[in-house]
Length: 172
Image (cartoon, rainbow, N blue to C red; front, side):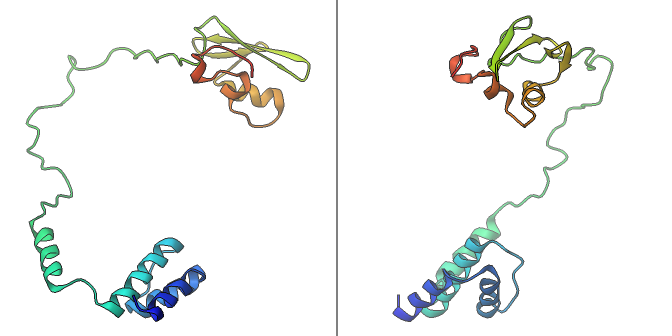
């Protein structure tokens, strides 16, 4: 690679996105919609190098066109692929709910998670429909941690329920 081309590419590294967009318009002859600095740098650097040393050979261009023409491009799957009738009938209808799988980080419903926070013992009872703390039902441990601390917390971290210790309530 020539020294002038290398210096020109190195100068691109210190350009702002706006300057790279201007350079892109200069070397490609058209505006770009991209605002991604790394993408613009790589694209402009490639073009500068291609203009200085020549782009793809004619043979490579022809091969790329052959590959593109042979490609089976589909925007959507053909409608005749699946010949089954998936219409709803009373025999196919679901008549109940699939039970949610319990989170392995938590004890079984009826169990508790505990944490001492600023001299207070925070005890949360695990229930089927959520979490009970201080007589109220919450959807998540994070909501309880936020209520207790006044800030946003990841409930599992706040109560020490980590996946790697098998759901035990081990304090750190």
